[in-house]
Image (cartoon, rainbow, N blue to C red; front, side, top):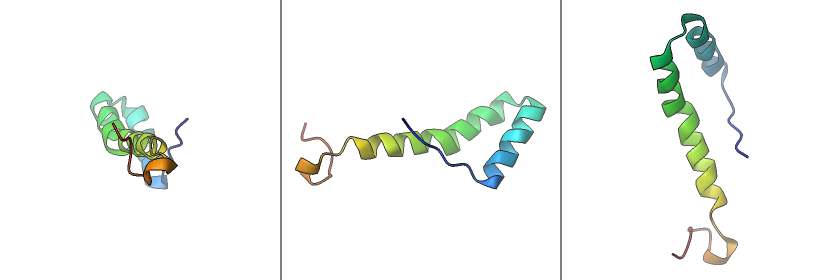
Amino acid sequence: MVTVTLSEQDIMRLEVIDMDRDEEDALKFLRERVLPEVKRQKDSKMRSHLDGGKGSAF
């Protein structure tokens, strides 16, 4: 599971995207705010305590 915390500014932006039905800005928001956080959390979970937290040995 991944948790993404949105700022007040993010929420306002999403509300505007929804009102405008702006598909282009929705995709831009996902790429700028959501996907980087998903990647960051996914990468942090793949580190092992056995390798000093530096990722996989492979």
